[in-house]
Length: 212
Image (tube, rainbow, N blue to C red; front, side, top):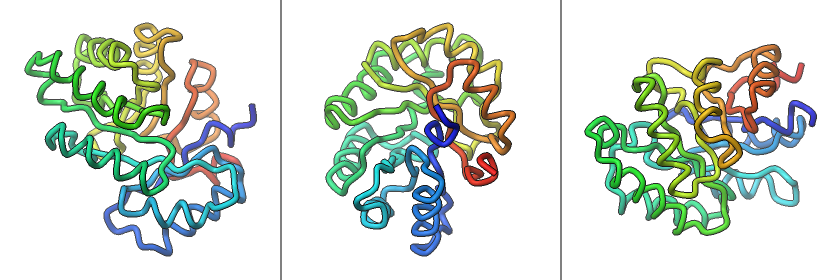
């Protein structure tokens, strides 16, 4: 597949204006990116700007900390889908994972997936804050909860995607879930390396530069 088919063209800045989101969507149309990824308040703008195009809209929830209640995350996810989002990128409750509250982490992912039905759910595990064992556990819990993707990072933590983390994630999820590499993917060579490692989607704000 062409590189553009892997890209979620992303603007999740708190300062993003309506014009910024419209520009993001116009670039996605121009370059043929798979999706745009935006905060929930911008879903309607993105959907309208992308009307009659194949570009999908992905919305982040519980972003970027993952520390709101499960009820709030479920509401946010449903609201985004009702407003036109095709996909949801959720942040796990990192504190729960580190507290070994594995049932709670799994049940939260499962509740969101059930709430959005056939729409794609990506689970951001925020690898920069996790030990190797915690990364493995987070991926296993996402698979058990029937998530569609595991995703490396929000891009707002202390680090983004790494080749080592993607290899580790792939070893756990196999073909039971797809992988999205996000955070710090700024050039074509890096993107292609992630694809070779088995990544199905790349989250980046540098999409046009990757294609150029």
